[in-house]
Each structure stands twice: as C-alpha cells, then as structure tokens.
Amino acid sequence: MAQVLEFKLPDLGEGLTEASIVTWLVQVGDVVAVDQPVVEVETAKAMVEVPCPYAGVVTARFGEEGTELPVGSPLLTVAVGTASVDTQALGAPPVSTRTVGTSSGGASSDANEGSGNVLVGYGTAAAPARRRRVSPRGDFSGAPSAQAEPALEPEPEPALEPEAGPARPQPRTGPVPVISPLVRKLAREHGVDLRELPGSGPDGLIMRSDVESALEASGLEAGVPARGAGVTGTPVEAAAVAEAEAFETELVPPTPTPATHDIVTGGIRVPLRGIRGAVADKLSRSRREIPDATCWVDADATELMHARVAMNAAGGPKISVLALLARICTAALARYPELNSRVDLAAREVVQLDEVHLGFAAQTERGLVVPVVRDAHARDAESLSAEFARLTESARAGRLTPGELTGGTFTLNNYGVFGVDGSTPIINHPEAAMLGVGRITPKPWVHEGELAVRQVVQLSLTFDHRVCDGGTAGGFLRYVADCVEQPAVLLRTL
Image (cartoon, rainbow, N blue to C red; front, side):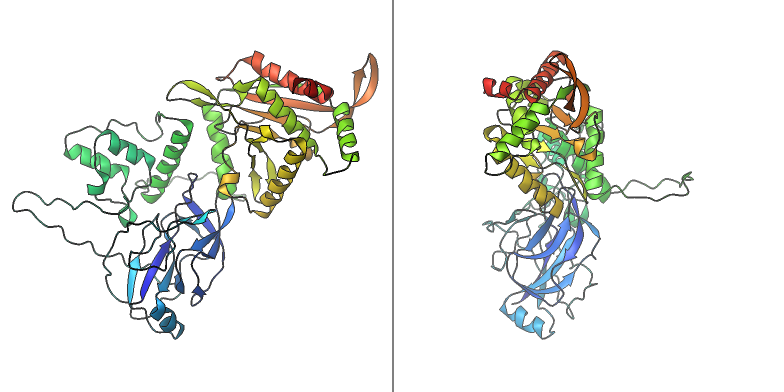
C-alpha cells in the first residue's frame, strides 16, 4: 500500500536549530531517489544540500525560498511505494499518510524506501533497527499542492486504564522528543522518565516546563537556575544549553507585553540572522565570558619575505605568507601550550590540548567565517598553504561543512589584507587566544644601527587571562616576532 511520508528538517548538529531555504532542487510531482538532494539550505555555519531519505514522488513542499525553518518543521512530503510512484505520476491520490519523527526522519520497519537518519552536511546513515510505529489518521482526498497544509499527526492510541487509580500514560517505544540538553539534565538529576512524560511543545516536544510540572506534581523542587542565570558545565555544554533555551523560547514565545514607542523611525533594518547573527552571538558571548587582554609588538618582516621569495624560487607549490605565519604559530604554541587550551568552568581547570587545530578568519560575501585546519602542528608550510587555499575556496563558494567550521583551538587573523596596521582581536570562544597580523608595509626602521626602509608588520595577541599571565603571553608574542624577524630562529628551535 502506498504511503505519503512527511520529511521534516532534520537535526543539523553543532547546536544549529534553524536553517533558511536557499534553493529548492525538486518540484512537486518530481520522482526522487534515496539520498537525492532535494533542497539547499543556509545555516549559521555553511550552505549545504539536504538529502531525502525516501524514494518516491514529491507531493508537497513547505516553505518558499528565503523562508527560515526551525529544526523539526515539515520540509516536504513524499509518496513512497511502487504503487504510489505510478499513481502519483497519473495524478491519483495517495493511499495513506504518515508523519516522520523530527530528528530521525526514518521510515517505519515495513517501509524500506528510507535510508535512515539525515544530518545536514553528512548525508544519511543506515536505518536503525527499531522504529516507532504510528497509525495513519486518514486518507487524502487528493494529492497535496505546493501550498498544502502539513500532514495530519496520527491520533495517539488510548491508554489502558487500570481498575483503580488515575490513568498512566504508556511509555514511549521510540525516540524521546526532546531537544534541549537542559531538559535532559533536569530529568536525569531528578529521576524523571522522559518516556512517560507527555510533551506540550510542537509534535509532542518535551519542554522544560513539562519536567518542572512533573516535579511539582511529585512534590519535588526543580532546583535549576532561571534562564540565563549561572548555567554551569563545560563550555561545550554551556553553549548547547544556551542555544537550546533560545530554541525553546522561539517555540513558546513569552506573553506579549504592551507595545512601546520605538524612537528609531528611519534607516535600514538588517536582521541579525544566518552567519551575521551567529557572528554577533559568538562575539558577544566571548566578551561576556572571557576576561581578555591584548599585547602587541612591531616586527621587521623583511627577512621573512626574503625567505618566502627564495622558497618559491626553488620550484614546487607556492608558499603563502599566511602559511609561514601559521608554521611560526604552531612552533610558538609548542613552547607556550597554555595558549592552546580551554577553560573547564565546571571543574575549574585549564585543559591544555595536545593537537593544534588552527582557525583562520576568511571574509566572504556571506560574512566572516573561520575555517579550521586540522592538525596544523603536524603540517609543513607547503601542506598548510594547500589547506588554506582549499578551505578559502570552499568558504567563498559556501561549501564548507559544519565539521570544517568547528573544533578550532587557536585562531590566526590576518586583517592586514584589509589594509590596516593593527587591531584588538576578539577571541573565538571557547578558545584561549588569537593572533592578529596587520599589513606588511615599508616603514622607516633602525636596522643594524642605521635608519633604513624595512617591511614592518604589527602583531597583536589577545589572550584569556584565566589561562596565563602577561609573562606567558608576552613570551609567546616575542617568540613569534623573533621568528618573523629572523626565520632561522624557527629552524634552531624545531
């Protein structure tokens, strides 16, 4: 029997809770294959294609190009099954309808057309063994159009009432519909079984208020801070909690307050969303949480530029200035590992990291992004140049995956490409430091006791004062400057 499955915008990972539709790659009535890309979406991290986990006929699309959708909202519906492909092509109505879970996006155990879970940027995986079965509510009288309403949710099966006492909901057998890690933590600390808890959010999503209500009914206190007040845990956990709370706030908006007069009456309003919104949020968080300090120094980069010319004249792939600076940074971090670390607030510890995953700022038409070069400490200048070029090209084309934009441990910011000499970088949270590099330009400089025109660059280091004091930061910056002025220093310390 043919079925119409509703494919919802899947869990995007990396704390992302929404995406904007850029381009639909299929039309209503098109036949799609398993894992065929059906829509191109833009997140705060990158622009990626979303594959459909089903094979069949597209019967409806939800959202026009430019529409912003939260995770779990309907994306499209697909009529699956041999009969559905034939009849839908002829315009016949589908036989039955099924709604697919928010995060899994998988088909039922008796429908093999789906490929399983879908994650933006990573394709699809094999379908899990267990599936939650739901009963169809009814048939459509005709094929849905592009403006069709979302598929009707299945009616829950009535719970069996005991002979005495209040009715107890049957435990869920499938995935628990909860997104917020704060909700999971609250339930775990107080022994609340989320599988037995009804959700008040969209599609039965369990909210924090549902757990708190269950605790009040059992006579327990929630014992959790108010939103935005003293969330503890590792930086990664704190980030997930903050993003999840923001998502809950969007799902359940606060009670509206009386409108106030807006004194700003003119000008152009630009929404803080997508990459611009993500940058704003991350920089604001860095300023709030990290007690940063900045030190800087001018350095004579003439010998470094001469060394680059000699390396490129020897043949082989060209070496970029950024690659040479990155090589110097990794050597400096080996001597001063305090600056390649993160702060664990829960344990009140500074965690020094073994690998250097070097981020670098890249300006694109979509905004500022920070691609990450993995294992930069294990690469030579030639390998670094090739990886910088690859990631920069992908960034400008909007093809970076979430994995290529996260996980950095130290950031190199070459703002000299904008023609400026100096800056006070803002640390890329949750990292501990960022090195800024100004333009390399001819300036008067005292060289070997005489005034001369030399290629001078300003280097600035912003660091988290919790991980080290000024002596360590100054030592790091002085070592970088010495390597810039005398590249042989780097060779002596390798």
